[in-house]
Image 1 (spheres, helix red, strand yellow):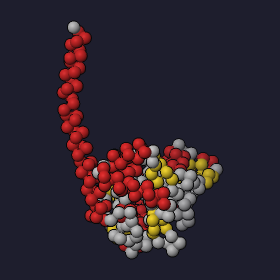
Image 2 (cartoon, rainbow, N blue to C red):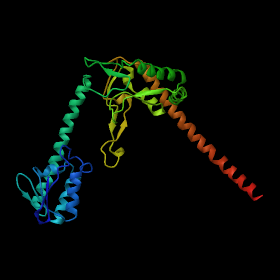
Image 3 (cartoon, rainbow, N blue to C red):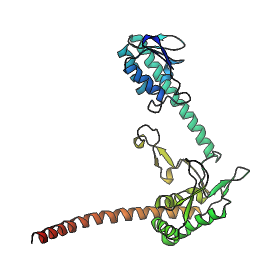
Length: 301
């Protein structure tokens, strides 16, 4: 897009090239456009397609309102618009609605195609550290025997100890690390060794891929959990509601029956811990108050 500043000095903004117009928070160019208009520095906004400046009605109508207040014109490849004129404002508003609807339809088609590919087990999904792809593209156990042995030890110890925290304590006491495959960092998707903690142990125990299952739809986007400035925020979906779950799709470290038993045990442990914590807080408040009173009385004496 181009912004014609006061005196008709042109300023080209290309920071948003290749980015979706679904949200203005993540687009520096759009934020710069809004700032220049709000400061009264712009007189004309030029774009190849005016409705593509924003594919979100909230951002689009914010732009139109600012242009109307400060008398800024909008131009694209077809015509010149004056947001202060009713008919131009109406036309721009309808263009923004159609642009947002078009993006929605594109997302639906892409999601349907992705889900159909996942239903056939052909969608390439990120693999945990214990699995890898062979030359034919099939999922196999990680050829690194140390990785295999460490993961088998996690499942063996969970069968014995029945607690993810207890497994974590065992690994830390033995000085053993866990294999992970980070998505970000200097070596993304490469196996790395990290200190054992409860979250990493639980992620291994809760990953159906280690039971030989091909799963799609374990998490669902939840806008209420999105951090400011980000569109990412997901919640876990119950196993019964997973969109695709193909059992025995590839080799695994445990059976599907053991995986389900592990999930029930983890859930029971969580409920027991929460119940114990609640009872401890209720029982611990009164003794704490009595001890404080006794200490105070002793000080007075």
